[in-house]
Image 1 (spheres, one colour):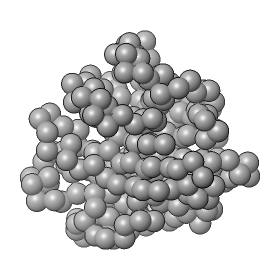
Image 2: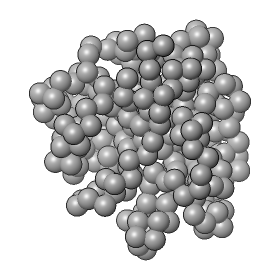
Image 3: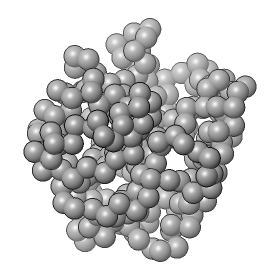
Image 4: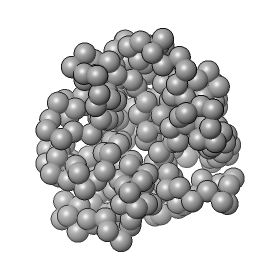
Length: 257
């Protein structure tokens, strides 16, 4: 099963690229972040013509997540438990072919001296608790999306550049590693421990041209899902296309064993 996560940074702005890319690569499950569109306005029929069922948690102009599946899935939740007042569209969960998919768009958290950072830490605490509880089912769980976390020094070109940023804050990285300590595995790092493998490059300061990127888009696998991992990779070529997202797709291939 080919599974991919992609922060499109606005589905309307990326439609031409997105459609051609889906035709070329034909993933079975697609997780999208920052769709920046309400559910009612999402171009559902275009994706349905490509054979996808669409499961949405959209928001006007900001945030928004979606999961597309080649067959029918069961929508489980659009809410990450633990905060009934949270109205931001950052989470969606579906069951598909005996697998449990959680697509997330974790808060950025900047500036650190604001409530945005407090919200990020609180959101991560809720995610850790939910993912811990989910493991008790022993299901095949795939948690994927834009985590807005640089997990380790090798996941950015210049750690000093990010020292005061919420993406690289020590408390944030610790909470990310709580997920790994629970038993989830980082699908990219399982197979590739090299430096300079990034998923996001800023539009400014020639970040793409100078490969000054960060790895903040992740796919985490429960042990039962990781047992079926055959391959994982980052598709960086999309960043060089016209009108690109600042992020690129991250893939996993799960076998049937």
